Amino acid sequence: MSTQDKKSQSGSEEINFEKALRPTAWDDYIGQEKVKQHLRLMIDAARARKEPCDHLLFYGQPGLGKTTLAYLIGKEMQTQVRSTSGPALEKPGDIAALLTNLEPHDILFIDEAHRINKLVEEVLYPAMETRTLHLIIGKGPSAKTFSLDLPPFTIVAATTKANLLSSPLRSRFGAIFRLEFYDVKDIEKILTRSAHLLGVEITHEAKKILAETARFTPRTANRLLKRARDYAQLYRKNVIDNTCAEETLKLLDIDEFGLERADRDFLEILIDKFQGGPVGIRALGAALNEEPGTIEDVYEPFLMQIGLLQRTPAGRIATKRAYTHLKKDHKSPLF
Image 1 (cartoon, rainbow, N blue to C red):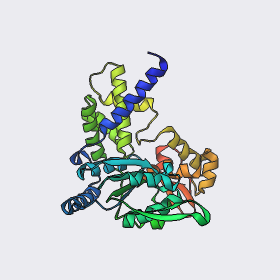
Image 2 (cartoon, helix red, strand yellow):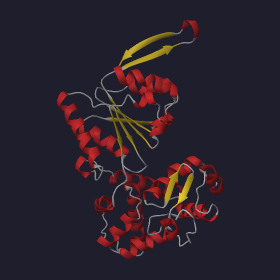
Image 3 (cartoon, rainbow, N blue to C red):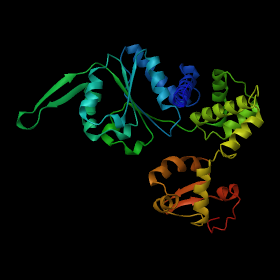
Image 4 (tube, one colour):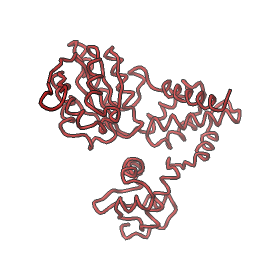
C-alpha cells in the first residue's frame, strides 16, 4: 500500500470513529439537560400535531454537540436531515435549490449560520416565515418575480458566533438554545460510552484525568481518549490506566488544567509583556501574531471559564490564579 493510500485510509478511519462516537439515540446524548427538556417538549408537541418542528438555532463553543443535536432531532421527528453550511450558500440560487428539493417535514441543517451571505438571507426570510420562495428571473426591465410554495420544513442552524447573526434572521427562529460547557461528571460518562464503542478498557482514575483536562468539551474528551488508546496500543497495554493517561497528556504538552502550549504562551505574553494587563485585544493579537477574532474564539472562552483570564472594559487581565498556575510573581496592583 502506498504512503498516500495509508494516509487516506487513516483519515477515513478517523472520520468513521468520529461518526461512531456520536450519539445516535436521544438517551445516549449526555448533558445539556435543560436544552434537551425544552426540545423534547417541542418535538413531542409537533409530532402530536403532525407538523414540522419550529425553526431552531443552536449556538455555543465548537465541540459541544450542536450538529449531533440536529441529527437527533431528525431521528426523533422520523425525517431526513439535509446538511449545508453558511459559506456554501454564496448566492440566492444555492438556497433555492436546497429548499425546492426538500420533502415534507424535512430538516435543513445549516452549520456556521453566521457566514450566510446577506443576499441569501433575504431569500430565507419569507421561506422561514410563510414557506414561500420569492425568486427574480432576469435583469433590468425584463426581470420577472415569481413565488413558489414550499413544503412544510424545519431549518436547524448552528453557530459559534450568535452575535454575528442579523436581527431579522435571528428573530425568525422559533427557539434559540445556548449550549453550555459540560461538567467533569458528564465528560466522564461520555468517556465511558466512547471507550466502550472503541472497544478499549479504561480505569476510573484515567477517566478522571482525561475528563479534567478535556476543556469541558466532549469533542476534546474523545480526541484525548483516542490518543490514549493509541499510546496503550503502542506500548502493549491492555487497559488505559492513569499512567497511560498522564503520559498521553505529556506527549500532547497538555497540563493538569487542560491548557495547551498555545494557551500558556498567551498567558505568559499577557503577564510578561503587559504586566498582566489590562491590555487591548489588538495589542495582544500583534504580540501573539494572531487575529483578534482567533483570540476571542479560541483562547478566551476556556481561559475565562477556568478563571485564568478576565475581560474588562479596559482590556484583558490575567487573574491571580493564572500567576499561580504559571508560577509567576503576581506583582500587579490589581491583586
